[in-house]
Image 1 (cartoon, rainbow, N blue to C red):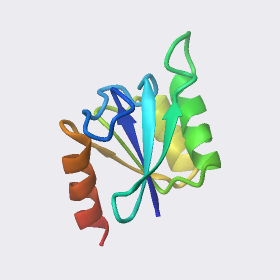
Image 2: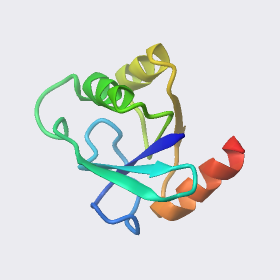
Image 3: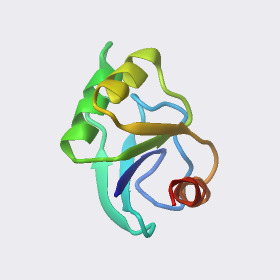
Length: 105
């Protein structure tokens, strides 16, 4: 299982980003909370379409679950089309990840 968390910085001790499509980074974790990849979000700037593009990017990386502070309508539609689960969480990434993993087990 791979979990993508929208992050405010590249550090796993940072906070979950409030914005899913415009998050500066995505941190990818495995089912044991190990950080396996950090992605600079190429869609964090610019005009519309970020949510759809981010959902596609994460699906292409075989992500199973996406975590962010808030998801826009277009991104939730794109995640649903790709059958990716998503959760709105705030605060510290490690705490949010622990909560998600407890629900998924």
